[in-house]
Image (cartoon, rainbow, N blue to C red; front, side, top):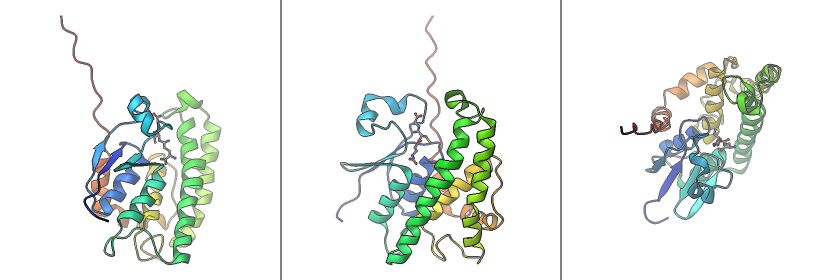
Length: 225
Ligand SMILES: N[C@@H](CCC(=O)N[C@@H](CS)C(=O)NCC(=O)O)C(=O)O
């Protein structure tokens, strides 16, 4: 590839947007941040809707190429910008398949079917839009804990990272779900605690979380009297 990539990342302040920031930081990429947030109206402007008809964040622009879905963005960045020193995707076919399995599992089972269901139906989250449903929230938390058995078993051999001894983008996805679960008061499995402590030490985790800070709300200028 020639030249410096022209990367712009739309979105900040959520568990999904931090994934894309984190991949950028792991790969040492420079990028422009457009820190728009959900439910601020910023995802619904004509300019943004043209880029992303789903009106969701995150969204990545790489030159004239646009890609949404946090896990797809992370996979794209990993594929395009990994180097022998900094690689976020395994190459060997079976390791690649196992990586894909982790990514789909985390997005489908831990995020969409569990944590996001909780987010939609908690009174302190999106319950005012999708309906407050304590029983649904409790069941989703229980389901999350059940699915975490897969993680507990994998980490039982004291491996450093989900795929073994090398950090991969599956660790980005898993960590954001574990952090999210902790924030919601859902217990995480035993082996995930030392794992998470290790990951939290990573420089890129910290700098990405700082980059993911939501933009300060725009306060209207005081009316002139
Ligand atoms: N599956 C998508 C979910 C993206 C998503 O739902 N984003 C929310 C914020 S976390 C959003 O942009 N909502 C738009 C809005 O409500 O304005 C992903 O992982 O990127």
